[in-house]
Image 1 (tube, rainbow, N blue to C red):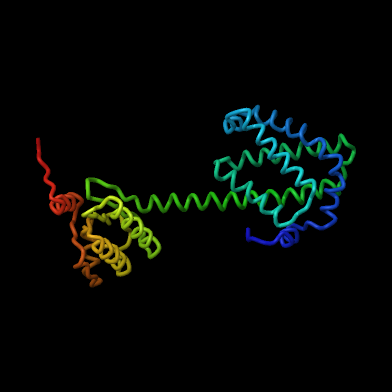
Image 2 (spheres, rainbow, N blue to C red):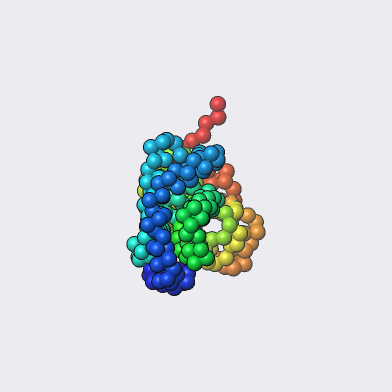
Length: 287
């Protein structure tokens, strides 16, 4: 969902001034009963194990009840301005940060709707216009919460994927190792370079082994990315060893005329480790 002003959101969700006035007209009957309705909501939701698992103490539940009270007071006041919009988005962000599953959020919305509609009947205010107004405003709220929740979740996934795509490991003092799997593009190359250079500085590494046995495609662009990473590492006083060059990749490099003379290469991880130990002045002794 794109970001709009409050007026644009109302237009997009067909929320008219009449809709908001319909909500406000019953607020005097609804608002005084919100605390009891929220207590009923928590009694029912906490009877479900998957919901109760997210709440550790009575104090936490009381705080959430207070937040829910503020939310529904705002809903029935029906002042849909930019602050109202941001408050709904903030709810989605909080849910995403704490890892609350979306199915629990939907369960909560369904239960609240059931309780409110029962209250409409009890107060003898149930009407088609009220039900329509309630559903329209709740649709806006739900869309804002879910959209922000998904945005935050996607951001977290992107960060996790970025971390997984550049898993630099210290296999020995002053020796770093990074296996590259999949497709190497300019964005990933930049991410790898930033991660590698950061780790070289942090670990004071002298040797960096870059294993490309899992690279899906070897072409001129990939070779240029590797050269840039190697040159940047060298500028920081760290030698780069390219390992995992298969016969097929070696043949492709020759056929394309790709120049990798500036990078030290090895056919296997064993050879790369041997070279790395020699560069670092380390010796393996068998007992």
